[in-house]
Image (cartoon, rainbow, N blue to C red; front, top):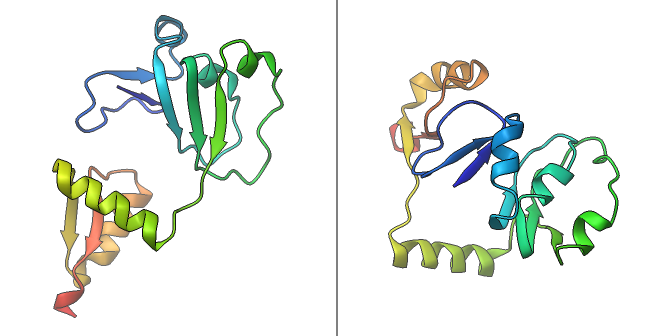
Length: 141
């Protein structure tokens, strides 16, 4: 299941919640053990904290240029919820993650782009017309 702020399907998600859909957000209250919050802009954290189950955790990895709005501690304390943050791990953590992915067949869907198409790929990113992460094929340089 995923939560998104844009009306599009996330690959391999079985359910998607549009965060602007108040009814869906209410329906899924207390249903997530973990939320990886990647939003790189200041936003109200309470609606997402409300989605967490007892002892659930939301981990922030998006760094907004402005602080998030303040919220009442009750949003965390009442459900024994945790708010965490993380930067990218070091070499050891990255290797551990890659090993986990290899063991469980977790792969990334990518679109390999030859160097002469890099400007076209960039335009697609700007126009939000991207389905997969672009990977520049450096072997062709």
